[in-house]
Image 1: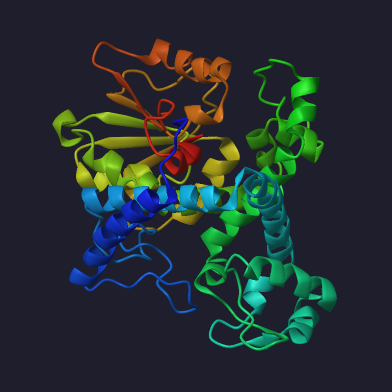
Image 2 (image 1 turned 90 degrees about the vertical axis):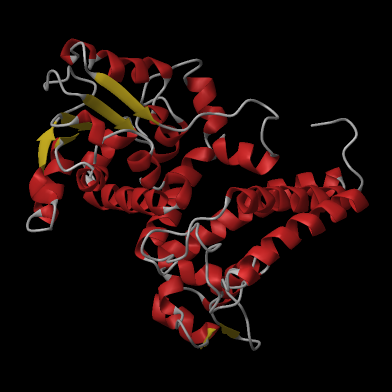
Length: 383
């Protein structure tokens, strides 16, 4: 960051210019206006999950203006708030309290208990969910300061666009994964750093310390179907968003140019990526690999589903040598980022004996931007 940030008036002018670009785009294309109200469209049109967002992808200039608008608004807020208020109220207090309050909402199913198009008294909501009314009221009123839930009449609660998202199963799973897996581990990062200085072992993470579990995260999920299912729901939600949309993979590589060839989808989970690729390139054969329990569950759920008959599912631990030799492509989509360098290298080393002269390893993963090369919000998301 520059030692001389822009003035609040110059920032306000930049905000106005970027807001005009975004506003003109929405109005000229008759797209839903931006709102936090209960019945508002919950995504920026064209960026929401597949199946929930019918609008076309956002043009590059509008996407840039929107990204800059958000970053400038935050910087303006920080400048107007002064460093002491930002450090304490915005960063240390607000984020901590919001995570704890969302955990409470998730744990007790409060969002599903609030009518989608009506209001409910705090008293009745507490009775429906088996929680203490006074505590429930205080927690929801804290979230309301961030437009999550709304109190239309004193003593009653209704949904906003944000709280209504919590009733969508995959979004609920994402929030649950964040507040009941990640949030608990995040509070133990210093303790883990003390215990496991410099370790790259999979079970030497804050998550392990926070949950008191010695197994690596995904290995533990293998023994806990409910938490594994929540993780899959979380991945479904993130995978359906524009930044993670499989269309980037489908359209970003010459799949049809491979002709009749075999693709090994390493750590392919439900096979949804291979399914999409099979529609793009019908001549290809697909082998979807994942852990045994995952494959058994996927086979059961995929039976009879259109298109899945073209996929072959195979149990394989990608830390072991690759059993399929000579495939045209070994695809690892959002795999390596979950592991330390030591184990990411081990995954790739397991593929080497199976490679042939025309084989390719295709890594589709996040790339960390260089410091200062994108605005703060984009860099924060990446990190």
